[in-house]
Image 1 (cartoon, rainbow, N blue to C red):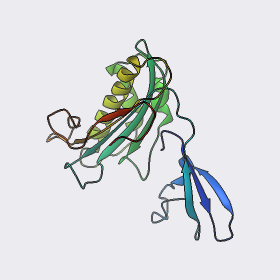
Image 2 (cartoon, helix red, strand yellow):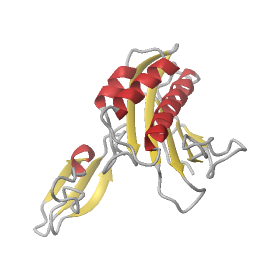
Image 3 (cartoon, one colour):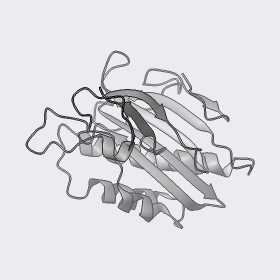
Image 4 (tube, rainbow, N blue to C red):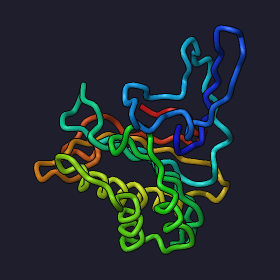
Length: 205
C-alpha cells in the first residue's frame, strides 16, 4: 500500500471524516514511541483506498527466518516500469527496515532513466541504506531485497505486452545461513509460500 500511495479514511466520535495519505499515517517514534500512527483518541479507520496503479510491474518479496508463522525480517515491494533495458519509473517500499512502511525518494530517483542492471540496483541499495544502522544482518537482507526486486520488476516489464497493465508477483523467502536473501519460494530450493501472477492487479497467494 505504501508503494501504491494508499489513502486511509477515518471517522471520529463526532462523525467527522478524514483522509490521511499513508505516507503521513505512520509516525516517527520521537519521544512517544508507543504512538505508532496519526490516529487520534476515538478515531477509527473506515476504509483504505488505492489510486489507479502506476505503469510497471509490481513485485513483492518477504524474507523470514522460517517458512511460516514468522514476521518479515525484511520485505520489499517494487513497481518498476522498464523498456528496452532502461527504467522509466520506479517505486520501492520496505518493511522491517524502519518503524513503518518505508520509502526512500533518493533510491527511486537513482533508478529513473538508468540502465536496468546490477550497477544501477546496487546504487539504489546504497541510497536506501545510507546512514542506516542494521541489526542482525538486516543490511545484507535489505540490499539483497532491493537488488533482487528491482531486477525482477525490470525483467518482468521487458516481457509485458506494452499495454500498461501491471503484473504483480508475490513470493516469500527464507533467510539463508549466511544472513543473505534466501532463494525465492517456488524455486524448488529453500523458501516457503507460493508465487503467482495477475494482470488485473489483484491479490496473489
